[in-house]
Structures are given as structure tokens and as C-alpha cells.
Image 1: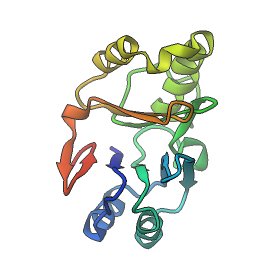
Image 2 (image 1 turned 180 degrees about the vertical axis):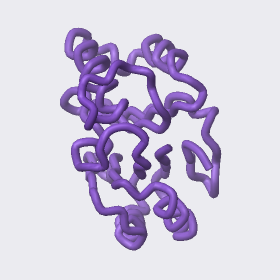
Image 3 (image 1 turned 120 degrees about the vertical axis):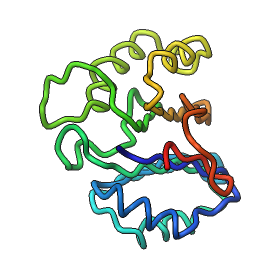
Image 4 (image 1 turned 90 degrees about the vertical axis):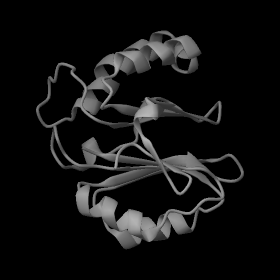
Length: 178
């Protein structure tokens, strides 16, 4: 299963954590967040290299970041399955776990299907729903305890972690699993 790391502004990510994360989650990585000026940070990389990730994180100590390191459980290990996924313009998602959604494309992950077949059509019809506290609570309750979802809204400059209680804290960072 994948790993999500949430880093608040002012914190660093220890190299021992990055090294361990890459050792167990080597099918690509991505990051989303906000820099100190509130501007969106977004990147995806098919190659998972600890020194590249460490350098990326070290250059962004003053930024809030959410990193996603992929461990392929469903779908191909290719660029099309790298997270973050954009649900609708300005709304992004990373996910750790497995969701039970119908998969119409074998080369696409369960998260890809969740975004493209469930969340995008819903949010396109109801734009304000994505950050509505009631909707987030229902979405969170629909997830199994083994699932974590992080949503980032660029317009609201907001990051929401669903099933955060199921994760753990490590040196001020939030980790989706150990």
C-alpha cells in the first residue's frame, strides 16, 4: 500500500523516513501543497529516488506539503496512475489504501476509478460539495479504516485529511501508515 506524508510549513522530513518510504513504495511519487506565498505546488515522478525526494522536501521547509509514494496494488505502474489526481480544476486528491469501486480499465488503479467515475461527476454537478463539512464526513465514513484520503483545494488554500485518526504522527509529520 502507498504512503502519504503530510508536512506542515516549517518542518523537515528526516532522510531516514524518506529512505524507508522509497524502499517500500517505489512505483512513483508525487506531491501537492502550498508554498509560503500560498501558491500551488504540484509534481509527479515515475522514478522514485530517495535523494530526489529529499532534495525536493529540503527545498520546501517553509511550505506545507503532502507527499504520496506509490506502491502498486491495482493498475499499471505508469505515469497515468501517479498521484495527486485532479478531481476538478483546483481540487486534488491522494489516497492510501484500496477502495471497492468497479474497475472498467484494468491498467488504471482503484484510486483513478474513484476520481474519474465517482468523485469527478459528483463534484462537477455540485461544485461546493467538495469542501462541505457534511460531505467530507460522509465521504470519510464511507472509507474503510485502512483508507486515508487527502484533498487539497487550491481556491480555498485548504488541505483536508480523511481518516486522519487511522494514521500516525512522526516528528510532527502525519503519516498514513508505518
